[in-house]
Amino acid sequence: MTSNEENLIREAFREKTWNETVTADSWQVFKVMAEFVNSFEKLSRIGPCVSIFGSARTPENHRYFKLAEDVAYGLTKQGFGVITGGGPGIMEAANKGAKKAGGKSVGLNIVLPHEQHANPHIDSDKLLNFDYFFVRKVMFMKYAQGYVVMPGGFGTLDELFEAITLIQTQKMVHFPIVLMVKEYWQGLVDWIKNRQVYEGMVSAEDLDIFAVVDTPEEAVQHIVKFYEQYDIRPNF
Image (tube, rainbow, N blue to C red; front, side, top):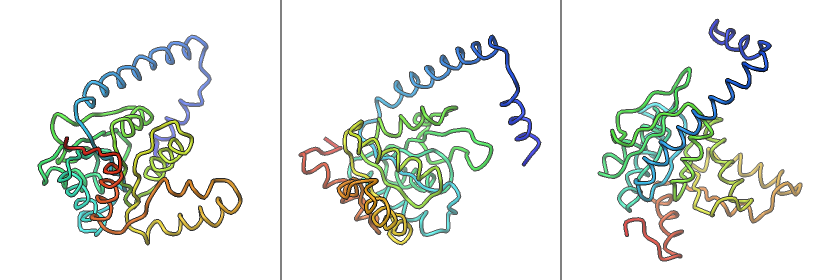
């Protein structure tokens, strides 16, 4: 643990006066509101998009990087823009693919102690910076017509399961969720089936909320077909 982390912990657990607490909380409300208002104004004009998630730690020479780039390219050619977390790794790959295809490349960046910096493939007018994870997560879902989830860590799982939960509980309109690279996700999917479904924690039909595929073509086709059944096209 670094000295900076130790200081943050000490400050978090320091006994504060009631006035300090109320004042800090009140001003924080305005900061949150400002992030929401700024994001709504900018993102309401971007048109149909797909959010692509995955690890910030994926190097450029990894096959996952190329897969993310290709799926973003394919989605863009179908009329979708691409939204990512704005950072390196899979996020950079997806923004790169969208940029290469001449489509909209959106980055929702957040300042972190490590890993996160805005990648160079985001459209200059479509880069947003956030202080709050929960505001950023609202934007991923509110302005996306689908999710593509590449191999990733805790943050990727967080985005995936929140979307599944909101669809499952009908708090959000069902949109397509695609998990890419079967060998990466199969153990998790098997655990959900063999443990959660078996013990009645989730319903078997909840597994229909997402699809698991291996290729960029399958991912793009799954999302396109989802909307074709409603006679909706993104590039209308």
